[in-house]
Length: 392
Image (tube, rainbow, N blue to C red; front, side):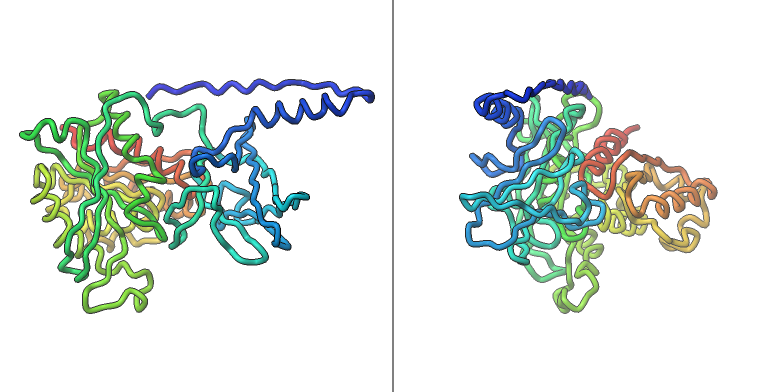
């Protein structure tokens, strides 16, 4: 995709001892004018504001508070790790802080008001950390592959269904490519795309920008039209309760095979065979994609694991002993894709697993890029993974 060069123009200002207060105020106003509201703000909210050097100014009105801070939560967060930024109280009850430069991409954050962790009313709400939380989108002026562009757009719809496995009504987010409704005879391959721990079926659309990524790749002729299915990776059998499980996702593989795949094939114009079916996911979803895909090669030929899945695994005995016969595995798997950010805490173990696969002679793609356990990395993963799908 086309990239846009980022030009940072620095303005030198020489301040003499006799500079008037009017000029000082003018300089401050110019600095404010150079900042922009974050794209993740609620409509009409001026803060958080992003500076040209990607520092971010947060402002919160809390006149009764004794202390306010803003923080990410994960150690590998792009917002100063998990170390809070204490905010400074102004005379009108506003609390303000300007951070260090923040990495481009999407970052969860929260406010800590008198020790209470809460969302920022100035931010849109995203589901992460297992709860509705605030999110900060910091644009990367050098990349445009995940931005909405003036190209034909697909649709993201919510499809409700009754799950036999869980005994409850569930919803899936489903992307259909541009022209799907206008071409009633066309049939499409399907990518099942999973989120990470603490997130939901909304994540790849709202945090990951998957629909824009697919739209832009299709407009550039770099991938084939496909349906993308995004379901909630948490699923407990009807006879069980999620609180009794480590993560509450023990029945997800069964749900995909018994509920979801038949549902999609019967309600959407798919090509219902393994050669036209892929599964991928990030972090927790990477492990799910590997387990489901490699454990059901009669249903999936393309498998992607983004920042997770194969860490600290005995690959010769894993997945039903699939890799004990590399030649057989290579005949069955059309694509095995592994990727990770080079600053991710799991990078070393995932790369070690990849080297084991390499030593066994198992065909696969390895992709690494700068970054941590974060959405900007997973957007790049999807951008590389999707064009490789369903090729002859």
